[in-house]
Length: 136
Image (cartoon, rainbow, N blue to C red):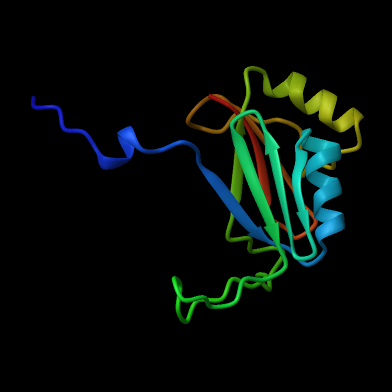
């Protein structure tokens, strides 16, 4: 089988996600207090949070720009129908759940074993985005 490379193989230096939130301070506190992120940039309408190799940008909105014409990032409207699931893979879900729960992170249920195996549990951030703690 012939191996082919992708242009990102030699260029990618990181991967981030951007979440549109309703309250920057509330969301910042959630990710810092519960998941150990550090604020590395703080502007009026943006926060950049980092932890190990993960970066999350929190924004209030992002209107159309010259390089994304006609596209506006805006808060989603249904908390019980989130469009984002952030997955944090860990070595031991039950231990991680116990520590995070003791620190006040509200989980939807205790860790469970889905039919495919492994363990996982879910929480939601202040905007309803799913936070999945997963042990493969």
